Image 1 (cartoon, rainbow, N blue to C red):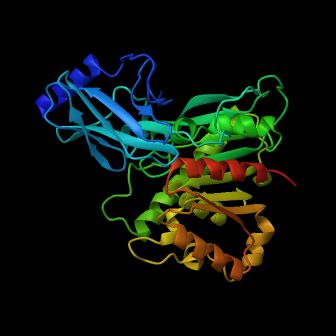
Image 2 (tube, one colour):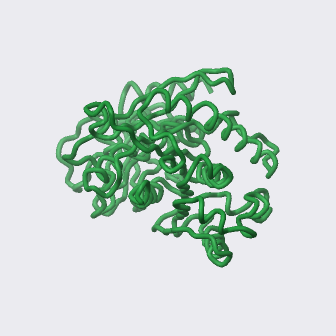
Length: 384
């Protein structure tokens, strides 16, 4: 193990930031590379070329959803070119003699329950999540003390363009949740939250709003005994943190329209299930609810998702939900592992008379799908 980490630091010190001049294959450095790093490089057909210097390593691989064995040259550099990749953001690891580590040439992102490398694969013609010459808002990192956990915690707060210039204007707020193995940084770094919001507001597609990203892990994880009861307990704890601590903190520190009609909740994957559950059970707090690629619709531990049991009255009294909710929105990637479950849930909701809007996007359980879901969801919020 000691030798492996020495090899990793050798990679960090000896390589990755190497300029090779003009490339004959028309490849370009990934936008997720650290400053000056020429590799990894993206080819026109969306294959990715990696080049790593690790002269003492015995075996080096790139794990990009699939493991690719790298070939060692006489100069100590290891190289490989992957298959064409699906557009969007992907976590990946550098595997040195069996130990997965972050690539020192890449920016790191908290995902897979650790800091991991990430790479952005461009999608032709899609630019809603890219920086444009429009007015830009700000993202603040705010610390708060939680009486529930007896600890200091953090949220990120997106403030729309013009917030600082108009000290009397109040704004609606969207509470946005991350997925399993991620944290409050996810929507800001991987999700490009602020850029998506800036562009939508500039195009007058979205109402200017404040967006708060939180950390759902009030307890670090659900634990080995993952079942419906532990999941409900986990969501109960986060609901208390959100409703009793975070929302009052945001109301005190920002200019918020403090009523249910101006408060929304949404999230992806685990956060989609949490947002659906909290939003539907607390219509006095949230009038707008969004669930992106929610794994909850699959059920837990092989148990089929029982909507009426989880949300009493959703089938027996859908009119009550229809009256209170301004919007229930559900989305999924078409290649997502929960796609069929989500599709079935939507059809059942419709048959039972529950009003909702929904959409499907090309892709699996991945950030590019969730960005598109956010881009589709936000313009529907806080409009009469």
